[in-house]
Length: 126
Image: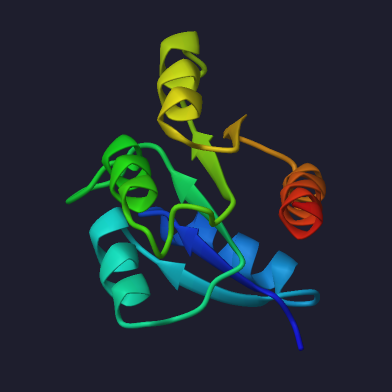
């Protein structure tokens, strides 16, 4: 059975690219913002890892991290943040708030896949 990855990004092209790239190895679910993603998770869906954008409408990436990590059900799900902003301040905020990794757009999907495999391996070990 394939592991499941949740992609949370308000840019439809990013969602489509990642869904296409990762669907060979993973079951991929795409949501367009943090609020939609949290609602979907709260419906009881199981997820192995999340890739989320930093800048989204309705619930930005930082609020998404905080809400995810505050939940007893979702606090341990590996989370990689994507952002078009390279500011150290944003990276530090995300990592301090509980993101496992942070990548700058544009990014190489192969690098993202390696990072996902690495966080999934660490979760499996612990």
